[in-house]
Length: 254
Ligand SMILES: O=C(O)CCC(=O)C(=O)O
Image (tube, rainbow, N blue to C red; front, side, top):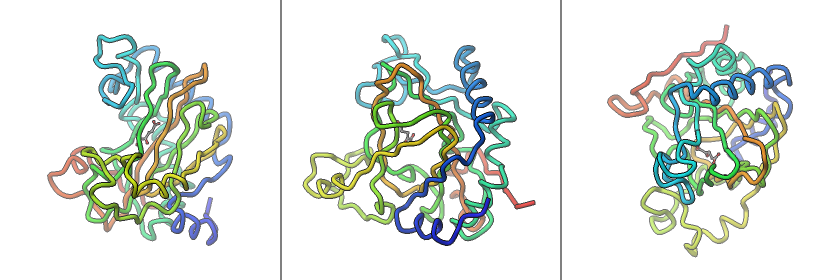
C-alpha cells in the first residue's frame, strides 16, 4: 500500500491519518483470538491497570481489578501474527513515506496489544507519546490497529488535530506532562478535540507529538488494539536512554 500525496499532507498538517479497512477481517480475528488466549493464560510480559497509576485505576495489584491487564507487552515477540503486522510491507512503506526515510521499529515503546476492559480499564489523560521518549528528534510515528470497533463510549482515542508541533507553556502541563484540563491556555485547545471512530481493521498513523487521550470502556466487550512505534534511521534513540534499552529493528523494504 502506498499513501497518496494528499494522505501524507493530511498527516503532516493534522498529525494523524486514518486508513480505513487496511487489515482484512480474518487477520484481525486471528490477532483477537491470540490476544484473548494470552489474556486468559496471563502470558507475560503484562502491564496491569494497577501499575499505570491513572486516575480511577485500581490502587494496587491486590485491590479489586488491580490485575486487569492494560497491555500485553512485547507484542513483537509474542506471536508471529503480531511481528508480521509490525513488519507488514504496507505499514513499512506508509511509515517510510510519512518520515521521509527508511524506518526502524522501536521495541522499547508501545510494542504491545492495548486492552481496555470494561469496569477496571482506566481513562488516559491528554498526553503526547514522546514525553518520556528519548530520540534525536521528536518525530516518531505510532501505528494503531483496531481489532474491534473503537468509539468514545468504549474507550476509543481522542485527538487534538494539529497539536503535534505545539510548544505548550509550562503551566499548561502537570508534573507528568499531561495537559491540565483546567488551565486557561488549554480551553481553546480542548474545544478542538475530536473522538476517533474506528472499525475492525482500521489503522491510525499518528505523530508522537500529537496530544491524545482516551476514556473508560462503558461497553461490555474488551477493546483491543495493536500499537507499534517507528523512528527514522537518521533518528536513533539516545544512547543509554530507556528508548535505546530494548533496541530497534531496521525495516528495509524488500
Ligand atoms: O487506550 C488508552 O487509554 C490510551 C492509550 C495511549 O494513548 C497510550 O498508551 O499512549
